[in-house]
Image 1 (spheres, one colour):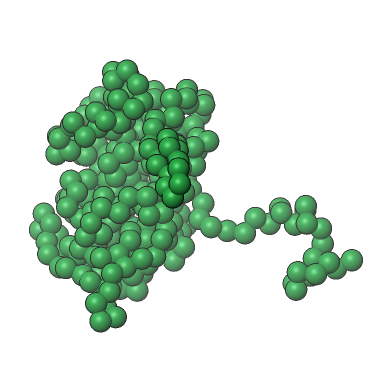
Image 2 (cartoon, one colour):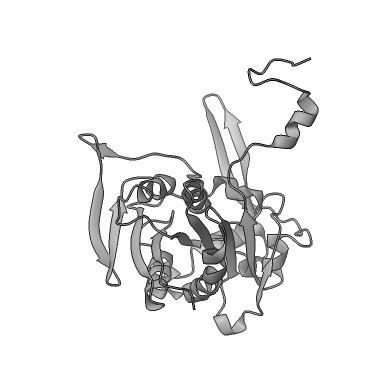
Length: 280
């Protein structure tokens, strides 16, 4: 069993979402020292934006408890919350940031836009190990709803309290010993199907798919406006990717790399000195 860790649980669905309650409670039940700090309103799609609401120069924070765990509803983006956690805004600096459980998979290169993943990336940039955790609520619906648009509409017909948050929480916490043993700044992205844990065949690694489960499309444009919608991509997932792993019914884990310079780029730019001028 992993030693007791200081864990901050955050998300982008908001502090009142069921996924964050399940993840925090399950982490506490395993003996970890847990605090919750999450946006006081839904903040999906925020990526790693650093935004906050201030009053008299102070970020608005409402303190309470969830499941007996200290909780902070913060008028800020998930990434900003992760950044503040690294400066002891919510108690001691966490050993691990768990971001989730998100309602909906965060898979493929579309993780770039995810507030759930953005919080994990920001925590890792400060040297904290982090894990983004998401529940895939779409794949099963796409097999029965008849079209991607119908499946997206059907998501809201399910009572969120009835979803299998415990499956995602258990997979995440079973991976926690590996994360805790990894170098500081390690990031895991975890997605699980919305099924009971005893129906989960296992956990597999998966590479990032080219994009994600859904995409934005422009449906109308005119003088002074553009109207967009979100639709399921509808493409068969490429073998070996996170979306293919989810489509096969498995939970998926992908190690992400935070922002870093692409050193091989110099091969194409030629030899340059530190001032950016050609050395030749």
